[in-house]
Image 1 (cartoon, one colour):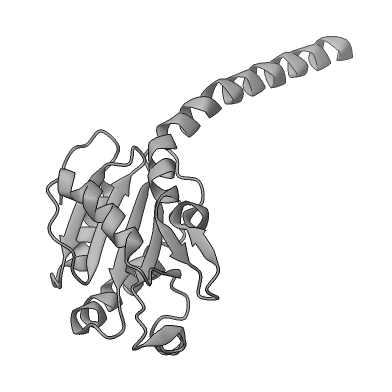
Image 2 (cartoon, one colour):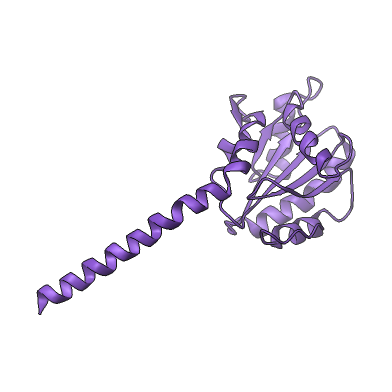
Length: 195
């Protein structure tokens, strides 16, 4: 009898493993386009080490969203919108279906030290990378332009789905950043609705 129970457990475990392995490639394939796109967005860490957005965000699965918020400490509109991004991050950071990264467009006139000082006071827990050459923003802009996006400007908010599609793209102060983030993060894949 013990052999029969052990055999059933082994069969059940084998079936469960087969299901997991069968599903794993589909999950990885769903986000391959997005991972490829994010790996083409070069940035620096706050320690000024070269990396890309894909490495900082980590794996993105089907149905998940990536939120990128481009801003600068010297831009008044960025400073006005940043509290909404911080609020969204703090309220949704446990939600693994939304990956948020803010990208500071640091310039020589402000420097990394200024950015770090600003973050220490205003948003010490916010995930931040640096885009000093604006290359990540320009690359994303080219994609968004195909999706009907506007010209470069600050702040810029982009929400992408796991397929790499831009589902929300806003430039400048909207006064609705928090609401846009909530709506865009709630849209499931295939839901073609734009906030």
